[in-house]
Image (cartoon, rainbow, N blue to C red; front, side, top):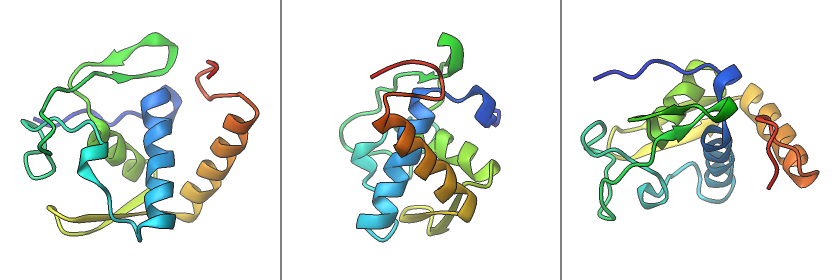
Length: 124
């Protein structure tokens, strides 16, 4: 089952925190992700599922909306569609990296978070 691509204008806290996670993994871990850190729906992404279970919280979008079966890997795929992230490696061992645009967005997001501002208008 393919999820719809969610554009950045609809992203909420889960997308933005996943982007910052990717930034950290790119800087500190050469782009290797730790699947145990992500909300992965094992039925949708069995090769990425981890042993902590397949319980998935819905992805929180802007304005309090949710996407019920959308997980963190779907967020990454939304970032690929938005040309912020590239995926290399293999399906079972993906390597993520930010594009130039992704670095710009992540940098701005970190600065906004440091100033207690978030794209969806919430606070810490």
